[in-house]
Image (cartoon, rainbow over all chains, first blue to last red; front, side, top):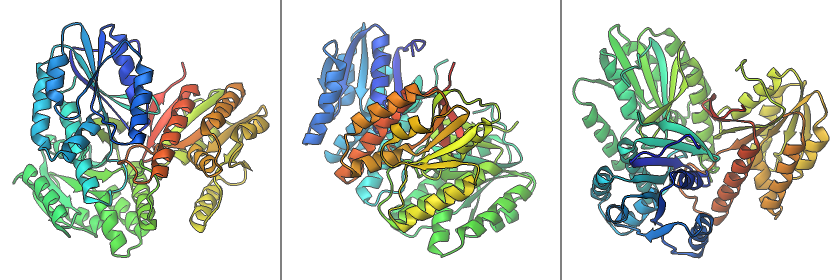
Length: 178
Length: 178
Length: 178
């Protein structure tokens, strides 16, 4: 991984649950040598989730500045993007979940995110789950979530300079800046 | 994508739900410069499905000739395959669903599809879902569907000259004709 | 596939259900020219599973020596690893399932597996399912299984010299020994 130079602007790290995508993304940020900033979209609404957040937090250690923002992700990015920093967003699928639970218009919110990404002049790594590779979910909400998550992933992938698909901790290149 | 020349015979585009696989496949067909023909296997058996079909149809526009064939896919291909045309089949997983609901023998039907694919002298792009990358489905029908879909994907992949796996709109090459 | 030379030590084959991962792995072993040994972790606890096991067994034929070991995988590997042999483990996800059902400590068991893998001087191909690419499972047990399976896949991938991700019978390289 030492040969990946993180460009200014957005890069996307996709993968499944427990695919090692967050660790891969953290290392991309750390290898940049810039001040690492972590924007957490996850909210600890139950014990299981608290534990996951705590495991990630312990792993990152104290060098990271952490911002918690479940909804206004574009704004959080614009505020955090000072020169000399590299920003990790973990993760877009929790952001989509939060927006759905808040009854937000996800297309509009995604417009705002893309506009922010296009405006920023620091490296940003966005982590997201690929969730569409199982059988059709039984619940309508599950199907809607899958549609929104897939649409957001496509739009962020299009706006990104690099994209990877991580399986068992090992990245495959989806897109590489020229 | 401008550097992909679509060969005579079958090519396969695999991906998850909302992975951008259909749009990628449509562009492969359009970039061929041939008359585009769309074979739709989906049936609008509920409102949700109607809406999805209508979104795809609007996106394709009026240049496309559309054939709806939920079951006799091999026959539909043989009838549509006139010189000067390029054919898109969207998608194999809905075809498998339709065959299961009709109580058909899927192995036999797949024999017929493969025979047709081997017989045709126009470019054909077949779109299919990869559905086996979640946990084991709870229902027996879900597991059977996953088995049939996977088996059909493997057989069509073997018969194809090109195959791609699309994630977030970005294709990875699975197979490339020599 | 004729250009893949199987190295001494572990290699990992990941894929979805019905992705063709087992057949790809069997061919890796057979192409080595070594005596093929099959370590089956699956147990026929119902008719559906019996049938799957029987299909795999018939396909492999009589050249293979078969060992059935649902739990003590590290020990089975150490016992089977005689010079002149190549070993297939099919599959790690069933092993994780068996360990969960037995109430074992999966991290500790995985330590033992990794230690055995690092100790062996024959080619070993381990087959495993990627199960984290659908939406979040509804049951807590489903989520735990997904977490354990993903963690084991990451650890075995790290210990492996080669790793592939198989889709529709077609392998993508995740990792390739130097």
